[in-house]
Length: 452
Image 1 (cartoon, rainbow, N blue to C red):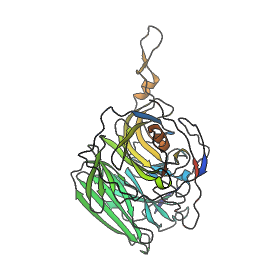
Image 2: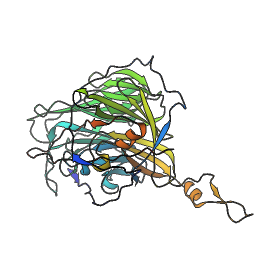
Image 3: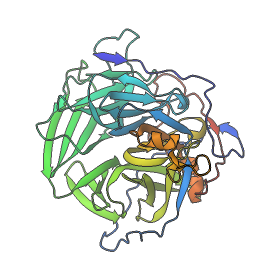
Image 4: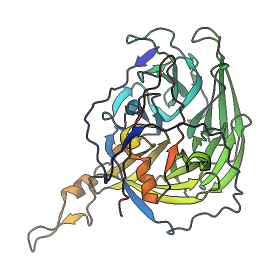
């Protein structure tokens, strides 16, 4: 058993804001469980967006940069059950796993002893416990499950996340999922069942020419931590050229984006897929879902927004999941520098409450970028002299900086003129047994869109 304590929040850390108009402190709103499955749209009649027809709004990041030693191959959010400021985003890189609290410290190493590829996270219906107590105490009521792929071992590695401390505990299964197939393109986790029946979850891997589903189950009274687990797997051949996947909150299905930009649904129980709509986004580096409730009281309705990022430009396009309607497009730009994205490697979207600016959700983008991009690449010297390469051009000629840029969902919402809504958190509160939930503090910021 290996446990790694997570970083603690440092109070008083400055946050960059695009524009701050009003501040309001109120008690946290509600958390609802959305079980609505939208009707699929015939992809043959779906209209792909017309190139150049969409106005791309620039949205300033509020936390930039979170520098990584190598490009992130996957991002996943973990929401603390009671303390929004203690949530974190976990990045998988070939130098290990890194974690960052949106309102906390800079990125720090969590586990750096394997080459990690991809990241996925789910909340289990029943808790699991460590075999032995780590030096800093036992891992209890750990319902957060994180998984990444070990490139050297050709195996998936699982980590339970303690509800209170955010500690990551590995090997709670003692059954690493090894595969003889090539490394997965992407993978996702889904959880089902309830706390009374036991723990059930599935790992779905997107592979070349196949979709592999690994199913895990453990009855409630199965005994010791490492015993009682059942595991089965099945591989479904497919002609789908998948790029990325995301869980559809409140349902038992996954969403898959293919190389043509079409969104498909996948039923992990049967391995069947169905096309929904075409986004027109090709060479995507990531797919994410944000869920919320639009309206109030009896007039409220659930809404799910699909985020798709272009891997070369970093442009993020938004669509409604119910019918594929284009909502708009944004570009997440650094707040204090004029920079250009070289490439984008991962995207993650969370509907959870991460405190402060991020109390209505957060968008994370892993990108390699030039931090200083000169307009013409040169700067003049004395009159009559030849132009010389500027300091910015010299920096730009070097390898780009790998960073995670965080943007609150409210900034994206304001930039696109979306109606106000209540977040439907993927993680119901409270999750800590035997204690009352600590009230969340909401801070409403009116972030105006940045004009390109």
